[in-house]
Image 1 (cartoon, rainbow, N blue to C red):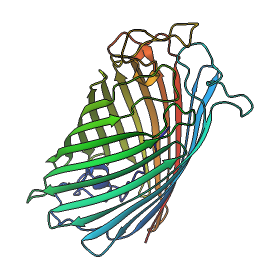
Image 2 (image 1 turned 90 degrees about the vertical axis):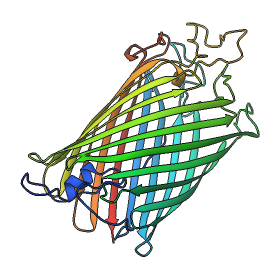
Image 3 (image 1 turned 180 degrees about the vertical axis):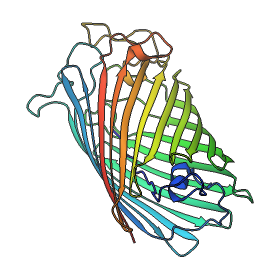
Image 4 (image 1 turned 135 degrees about the vertical axis):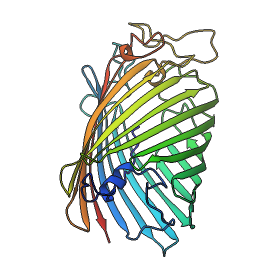
Length: 392
C-alpha cells in the first residue's frame, strides 16, 4: 500500500543579496519552530488554508504492471483565535494490482489478466489536530482513523516544542500510538491485532542567518501480528523495535536566492535491518511567483536476519527448522534511487498550485552492505502529485 503525505510549503518574494532574509528565504530555510533573525511569539496561522491534492502511484517489475494507487486528499489548516489552530485531513485511496514477484517465476497471484487476479481495495482516512500556542512554545494533540476492508487503524499523537529566548534554538518532543485490527480476505489472519508506539525528541538550531540544523531521535515499537497474510511462508517475530536518527541541514545562498535542503537518516531495528538515506533538494525561485525544487534521494538497507532468497523455479520453497522466515522483498538487501522535481506557482494572494513528479528504482545490486537478493527483480515506481491551495 502506498501512503500519501500532504506537504505544506509557503512561498514569497525573491531575495537580493544585500537585503535581510525575506519571505521566500524563510520559507525555504524553515524547520519547525525556528526562523533565523526573527524574534516572535508562537502564534496561530493568520489565515486559513484549504488544500486539495491528487496523487497517482504506479509500480512495476520487468514484464509486469503491478500496483496502481489513486489518492485524493483534502486538508484544512485554520486559526481559532490567536492561540489555537485546527489541522484536519481527509484521504481516500483506491488501490489495484498485484503483489510483487520475488524472482523470475510468475504466480496467479502476481499476474493480473483482464482485470482478474490481484487485489482491489479502497482506504478512507480522516484525522484532526488541535494546537495551542504559548509565548515561546506550542503543544498539539491529534487523532486519526483509517479503514479498508481488511485493515482498520486508530491512532493518536501529542507533541510540543519550545524555543529559546532569542528564537535560535527549538526543542521538540512527541509521542504517538496506534491500535490496528487485521481481518485478511484469505482468512489467514482473522481477528488479529497490532499495537505500536512512537517517541521522538529533537533540537533545531540556527547556526547562522543562513543555516539551520536539526537533529531528531525517533524510537518505534510494534507488537502483535506483524506478518503479511498475503505472502506465502511469511512468519515474523511479534515484536519489532526500531531506532531512527535524522540530521537535517538547510543553507540559503543570498547571492542566488536559492536554498539547499539536505538530510541523512539512519535506521536500525530488531529484525536486523540497517538502512541509510541521503536526501537533497534545491529550492530555486524562478520569479516572484514560481518556485522549482529538483530533488534526489539514495536509500540502501541490509536484509532482515530471517529473510531468505526464493529458490529459482520453486516459488513455494521455504526454509525448514527456522522459527522466523520471509521472502518479502521489502525485507531484502537492496539500494534505491529517487529523482524528481516540484513546481509551486502562486496565482494570486489567495490561490496557489503545485505539481510534483518522482521516479524510483530499486535494485539488489545497489545495496551498500549484505549479500543482496539476486532472485529479486528490479523494481520501479513513479509518483505524480497535483495540488491546489486557497488561503482565506
